[in-house]
Length: 415
Image (cartoon, rainbow, N blue to C red):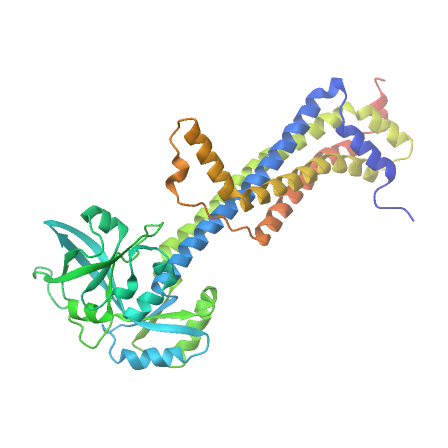
């Protein structure tokens, strides 16, 4: 029983990969094609991994700070929120439910005033938020009493504040007109925390009691933040909650709805980067096409001899598909290996490059980020591998078809 590819076809395919001296240009084209595919695949895997890491870090901070969904009322502040929070906590897939107050406020110290987003939560909830507590580098969130305040590092540095400092917090109650004078309250700084990203995160944290007093909400809150077991499947949880306990005037917003512009921007950026980097691979693939076309032209006599010896058009096509496909397959595998190794050790590489730049006296811009996260996903590696292999074999179709069309008489006419 004949095999799919005959042994002589493999032999000729690999022989054509080793161009002689007079065919040096075709050989150089093949080398550049191999290098281009390898670098393109490696770059694509590395960039996708870094973008995954940055996205995961940013979403982790969002989800750990402001919850997976928000329960609010269309009519204004929520009343009887404690009973609603308990009822929400009893539902399937709900991990926690926490009442909160959100608003705008201004900090005043020594005649300097800065605005910031204020968020009020129960003291025990603030102390349990790992995404915030891990970023506290001065003071503690566990000390937020009715007169305590935690501020973000940008406010702390701008106003020269440290734990123990006294600040004036200026707020305007929701029912007051814009022309009304803000009310002033004295607070003591208990903690200073920082975040790697600046995307509308709360810059002022106070206890829930303090927030109710500042905005004169009495026994009401802005809403309830709910955490579910699977944040990626939050829409299913919202559908379940809507049919169980919520009235018509209650609205549920998922973290995707609240941060829609950010989620959309991240998705668009990832897709655009994938497309741009794929063009690098396409350019390298075109080198395979041009190299094979030159090989076909140089080997027209050999092709004619093979045809007269009984080789059919399918055999000729397979020879050149194997010739070009080998470049693409090896280049794709080598590039994927480099990309995986680079992504898995990107933090070490970043540190080494940073140290090298500092050693040469350059400005170490790599220290702009405290770390460079990278999340390597098997699905991305498989997708990139599949893309590289598909383009590699697709590029060989035209040169192989052209080789198969060479008539024996035409190829030997001038020999």
